Length: 415
Image 1 (cartoon, helix red, strand yellow):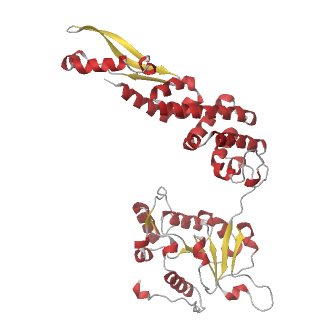
Image 2 (image 1 turned 180 degrees about the vertical axis):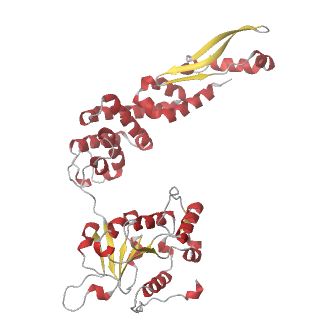
Image 3 (image 1 turned 90 degrees about the vertical axis):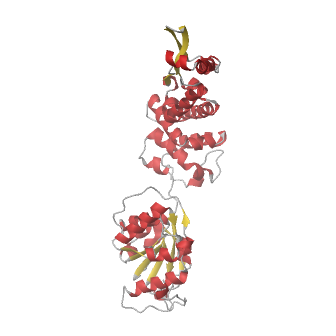
């Protein structure tokens, strides 16, 4: 015997599972559930329980009670009885109302924004109205937590921003320059994902406008540290600064010929490095490392990559090797992790991925960190230890003696 609460629970599950479909075509939503009425032996075994069940359905809220289909049965020992047999209801409005206040409130809010999106974006889309409503419903449901959490002003502004982008598909403006009433300079950055999803729904995913909203690309800056004084220049001519922050698009214009390039995942690490012979160090900015590795003078030099000892660090290392022919990891091994394991913290790693460019040792560390959910950030590694390791690696790569960099180093046997 299926209770009123069980039907409500099932309706809430159906709503969560069918949210996009119910919003796209509310009138087509329908649910039919068997109520599993008792058999005669079940009634004879516990007539009081059956009576309570019948009374529960008889006194249920109207939206639930009125959807019950009753069936008359005739039993030899009990005579004719009217029992709840099936529960059937159509229409997303009524179904979510039957599911409870929370589900109905969600439906009401999301349905309003789907309808508003349809009104504001129809003229900017070539999709038929039915198809457009369906894709807009999917886009809004995919980010329902954002839509349900936004106030009405921001939600309306998301729709108007999408309409503006579709009307100006190649504006070339910077993200803070979009001239939309009610939008402050940082608003679009915070709501960009929502606007992009609406644009993609109206225009089709995979288009340039879908990806960048027709706006000018944001500059990507990298720290550049010329760690060899000889590379910085000498004499009366112009000297290159030891440290600078350069737009990724301008890195290729630097006249540098390092013996080796050191790329650190995090900017903070690059900034504290001492002088090292033949070396230029760069901040990789995490997954944006490709923009650094494709710079011609970086391509001509072997690369040492030093990233966080975590799942993301090894995924970035794998990506780096797709953009440069000679990338070697450093300070991302089991020995380094063991030395500073007490400074590791828990993290939520991304899903396990196939990273075929990793070496056997790197694969072992990646799988271990992925399984344990641990992260050892590169900033946690003692600088003197890191510098000694870097010096040894540099010494093994060329005939030049490694200069004393003025950092006290721990004994190598103490590792």
